[in-house]
Length: 138
Image (cartoon, rainbow, N blue to C red):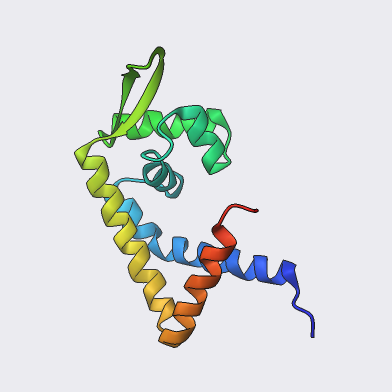
């Protein structure tokens, strides 16, 4: 029987959404919204607002709103880029790193709770499959 690729995508999305929804109260207690969480987790790898928007696949205007909020909360700051004084680089504060780490721990706990339904061997295979799918296309 052939695999329904759209179903696989939908199931993956449902799993990720379920994990995020289960952690929403924890994120709220940390002082962040779900979308702000994604900004916190990606800003180190993509420190420029336009780059961050492209990485997260969200509009630049939305990134601006999230960044403004995170700066106001003290989780992030803007710095002038020494290589190009016209650009601002985004940097997590120590408090922002702590919030990001606690949020990641909450997501890890929830995801681990779901992974407990499958065998350690299946977990290893799932990891291998996800690494293969996440790798850049040849």
